[in-house]
Image (cartoon, rainbow, N blue to C red; front, top):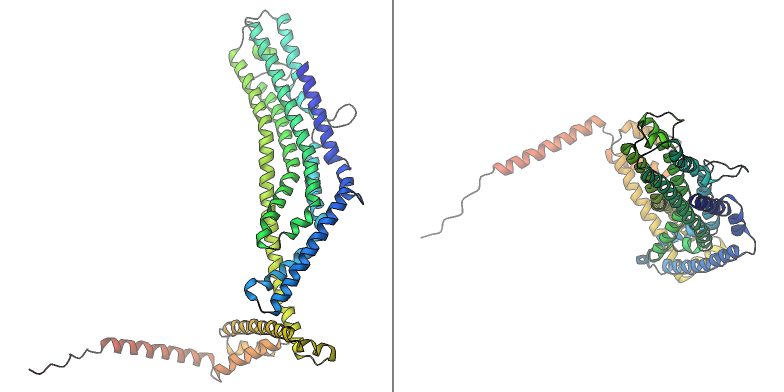
Length: 449
């Protein structure tokens, strides 16, 4: 029938589109071809970003030397180091995400039935699930086998439902075939722009553009597995509904639509006919909704992945920031105190020496804050515990000094003596407050008459 032919052509278009964009090596060849459009475009984007990062690095250097701390130069340096590393691996990261989505998509695609030549045919899976040819054949057999009242209505509904579901499925296949081709083109463009997207993550004002790129990447990449998953679900639902429909009516598997729609008195079974129509309406809605749901699933995946990337970047930034501040402080302190002839002259440069002193002072402030935290923490330890910790070979020299400072404040008194003194001080304080509250207020002096 024309409807079955349309379904077969739509299935062939979808199979071909999937084979070209996901299953074959065409995408990999285009993405990895040396001196190709993608490689040349990615290289140009990377060079532009590297120049951009160099200018930001110069700005950070000048801001650090001139102590322009209000511009967040030190925090920006940490992000710059991470992004400069990721820019050169942006192609690898992007291809890894695309390959992961393609592998997931092929897992669903391989679940469809294969044709006579061993190739997967999505249209065959749906034709078997809908049982379209059997529906048409059994509707034609009604006239020959039984003298049925309302014969033409039953035939019309059978042909209409069979042709309608085939037309809807064929149209959905054509739409998905086009979307898969668009997906491949968009992913190639996103691959070319990958360095620019990574570079845009440096500045707060350009992070919105980077977020749009990440959203587009995950949305397009995971649209493929979401779409094939929805098609697979539609086929499974059609197959299951046929079996459930017969089971619900109490019909064996060898019975077909003739026995569903025609009762023993050769009359139209309107209840079964209504259920039969509802079955096909549900399958049609499932097919139409597959496009919308696939797009939404891709968007949800993009949002979840974007949050994961942002969280990972924040953790890496915090970790790298702690290391860089420590290394910078130690390096600046070393340059200020070194006696090597070559390095000694560096600190004599006015602006450089001023900048190094600022970095070293920042490092000293951080160490002092850390010592105050340790002193507060060690204050809760017992004297015996502090003595043991002081003698431990694992205790650093700076921590040992903090322990000695805490012990010096305590003096030779034991822990029980210190507790008794604290209780006495609290008792004296309470007595003093009570006495002050009970002291009578003297009346004001009387004025002479």
